[in-house]
Amino acid sequence: MPNVTIYIPAEKMPSDGNLLELTDQCVQLCTGILNAALENVHIIYVPVRHGRGRSAFAEIKYRLEPFRTKPVMDSFMEKLDEAIKRNTGLVARIRCFAYAAPAIHARN
View 1 (cartoon, rainbow, N blue to C red):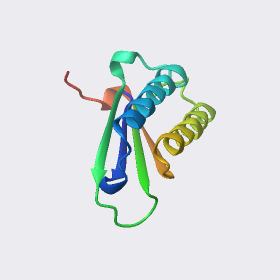
View 2: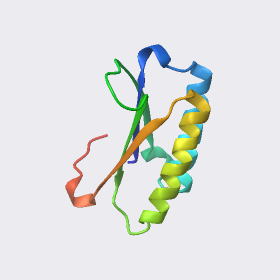
View 3: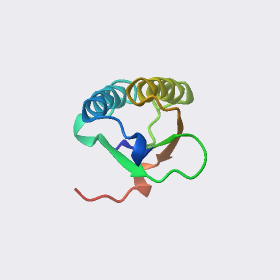
View 4: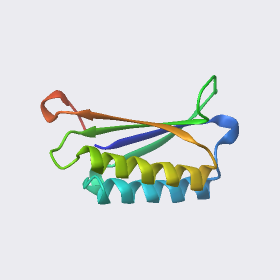
């Protein structure tokens, strides 16, 4: 963890180059601001049929840690918002969900 999933309308999916840039920036935010180990960072883009709301949706799931305070998460979301706008041209709704370590059951 963290897992970053960005849902983008299929017809507005950016080029591979833009997604590569966004991936690199997401990795930097996760390893820098969230202090995540590189091998634990997962980033995926899901093409969707847009129904209503913001043109993109970013969902971040991460392990709850004492150092991931509200100010840290606010900074992370602000910089993620900028990265998404810069690389996709879309305004995303961003939601972060923290999970306590004992509540996480994982494989691989």
